Length: 208
Image (cartoon, rainbow, N blue to C red; front, side, top):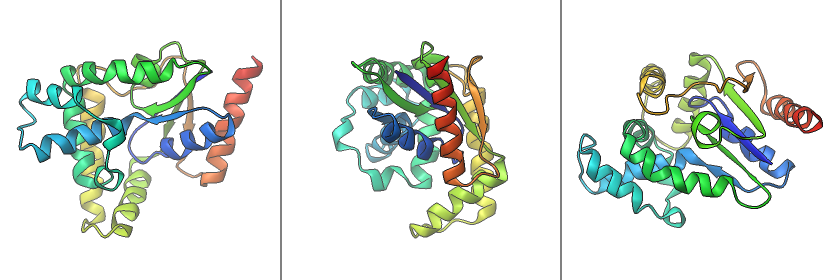
């Protein structure tokens, strides 16, 4: 069984995807971490994000096992992830890696922004997890402040809106719900309630 979980920043898709992976005993890949890691590598190499060929070279050389989880969860990494994710050559470089993970024996669960539309259009279950912009910005702001980052809520809100715009308007694999995805709005849901709803959606699809 392949489960695709898409949605914008801080919608809760990662938390939901991890919970589903545990519930249904499936390997899990946070595909956003690949773009965040690529973005950080581009920064570390002093490469201009406008240099698409150099960014693609970085993506092709990405070592999943060497990803620094602490560094890729910063606001800076998130902003760079959105920039490199808009580069078709980078997306192509990371496509095969994601597809191979998804099609392993027994299936898998992947979360991102184009899993149900591009990476796994044949997924057995597709979820599109979302929440209103203010709620998502506030969630992300609390996460970053808890980690010691200095950022205001207004700055986080502006970054969230810009990230949404860039992800939705890019020419290659724009962020959008797959036509056959089930929408899950977590704006007013607790984590437990959102996970319970997601589990119910998967189980319903399994029975169907």
